[in-house]
Image (cartoon, rainbow, N blue to C red; front, side, top):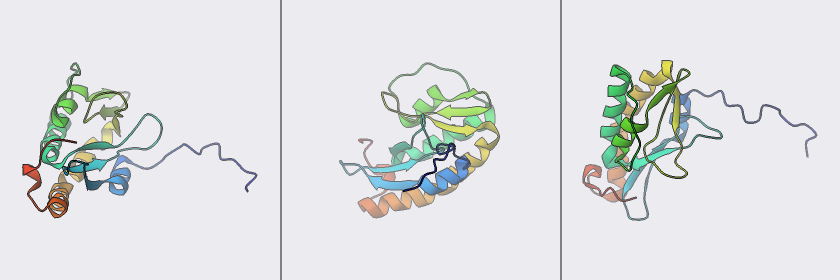
Length: 149
């Protein structure tokens, strides 16, 4: 047993791009729906973003739109992952945050504003691989998959 305790144990210096590269995966829900999941940061107050692969292209489109045109403030309600981003995306203190689903326990993705375009570009570049992985898991086109989680 060590007699040392790191006082910086919870500090994470990974960029959102590094974290996405390490955490992105495609899996099947209990109902057989292909899901894509990724985190943009680690630690308390953050969590993975998970959504049906069928919604992923639209999610990337919304993030690209926000990256290109800025972020509007809106009220939150039960929506698709892309609509949830439209409603929850915020820019505060140089950090962009958004959720892909609402409700208790859903955690926001957090990305430094200066890296937002790079994160969106990375996610966009993964779309064919994510859809291919979903197809290999289900044997059918991921865009035809149900939105059930």
